[in-house]
Image 1: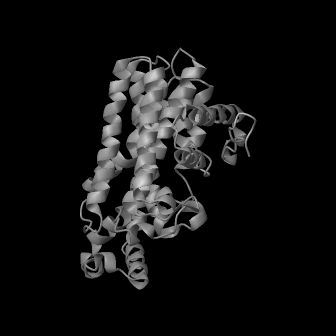
Image 2: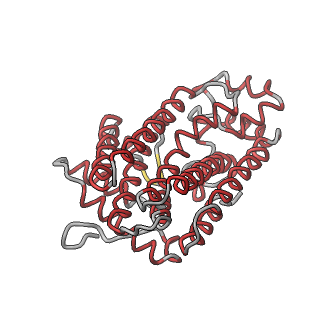
Image 3: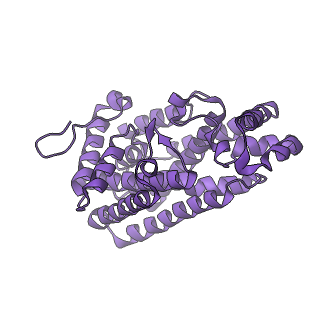
Length: 335
């Protein structure tokens, strides 16, 4: 549904009903993104609008908005614009990620490349990247902050490339896995929290606590996502379970399990793209048998504890309780 100006009626995820002030600000974030789309290609415009309203939780802009309460300057217009830039960046990475992983659905809906082809999807993602920089250039308080976040975005893209290069590669190293998710997922949470804090003129030392909090949240969030691929359901995960194995993405639970007994895994994994449904199910059973999920939960818990420790270092304020509630909810998802 659209109003007279052509902007869709806001449909923010129902999880924000318990935080009315955040829900209102997130509605403004979505409106700003839609009003910032200035491209003649109406198909691109509609695609981005569909992405915005596809059922995502807007977690990263929410963290950015909450962290904009840390510093002494409460500039709502700038906070909303920075949060909008964060969400544009997130959507861009999702579109590209779906192409790399050849994912058919996200949040139960067909992905951009599935509907329109890889070239169109890449162009859509690229436009969202340009929208990110456009918003940051217009609203970031200094070029120094813009440069800092440009480096952060570079690390996100490197993480995506590392995942592409690791497909169907035998998983052996926890360190390599953590490096990949640090760029692919944790970096964006870090940027979201840091930008909110630094653009509210929080001291650098305080903003770095926000950065570290975001990083640990992102690390735990991705590990939990990878665990849920082995024990979740479509509704919980937002994608078919065991989809990572099918796509040749071997995550922490399998890495831990292979440490216990690599031989049965190697016999199956050597098939690479030719894995059958029976092979995928057997791999999942082996991961559970050799405590891969159990050990991955332990590491996720360590990152969650680190995130809460950094959160506790932030200045007192009403925002802090919401941050704590959101983080605890996010990092204890049906495990």
